[in-house]
View 1 (cartoon, rainbow, N blue to C red):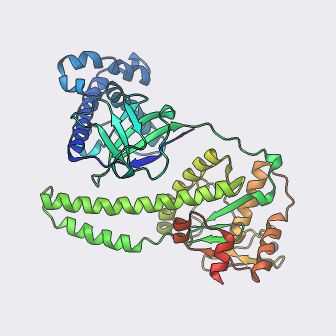
View 2 (view 1 turned 120 degrees about the vertical axis):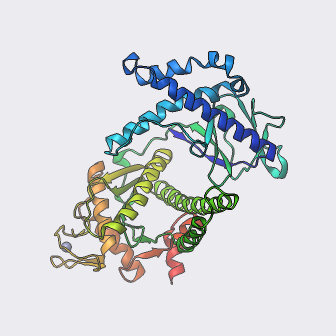
View 3 (view 1 turned 180 degrees about the vertical axis):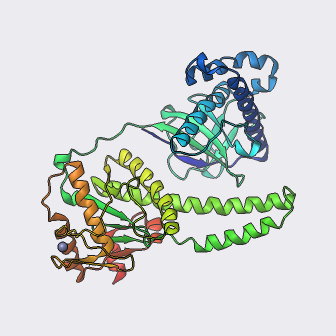
Length: 429
Ligand SMILES: [Zn+2]
């Protein structure tokens, strides 16, 4: 599997200019190549073959387009190959029913990165100023090609890096990501998984999630950022379009956007890391089946974007940490009784599950999470007795004295990296 750790770069002004020049040259090459590609008839070959035809014209192109000689060869090749990636992505969107046209030329603001393949770069892990490492790029225009890099985690070994992508964010900050192929750890055999080693997650609207072990994970509080964003956006709309003031304000808005999405991503990664390292199997609802059952569509749509994103991240961490991640049918998880299976409809404001048939009482979302857990165990093929999930729930509730969930604030997840049950419980006392 591939993963791509990302690091912040601290280029000098000269390096910044050189990287911008390279980014712009590569963008022009992309646009040129797209034009060439469009003139090749579709029956001339597969998508891959047609893109390769354009790529093969690069040596001849350098004959008259001398700027291209100043750019490392694999960077040029990757730029042309991007046409193929973009067409494939367009195809995926079309398949999902989006109305998409053909590929367009990229304006400077739309083309933010360039990529080195395997060679053309060096990594120096220690010798930079202020304890920073150095990323040394071949053929970057200018004299100094050693770009300081912040080592907030271990830099990868050079021989493991497949690709290096440099990207300028809309805030103006430059980042580098290293695409690394790693061996996938084996997932535990289904026979070896006990029901204690598995967890069900109910993705909620009021809270982010509730799990079958009784943790209720709150939503990230971004209200301050949101208020500030609105203020800065209002200010942006009052500036003259593309003036210096407008550009400065545009960056400010972009910085808030970046900060908010970083916070959200960090939260989801930490949560996914916790669940896939703490358990052998994690079960979530299949959002493609889940209908608009419970809440006003707006709130639900908004939450759903976050969940889909979280499930993708969860699956990625599952591969990385050797943990099964299984999506289950979500129909009726909230109405069904986790103890006896009888369905009882309840509106959203009823927060307690109280079964008229067997008398089982539990927090509504916890009950749903237990249903997700037992469906997941069934789907994965883990042998378990029917009443196991509920026994787990009652075991926790006797310890805690009542059947209320352990509420974990989202900030706890981002600060400590996990919603640990015991610490959260003692903090709540
Ligand atoms: Zn019941």
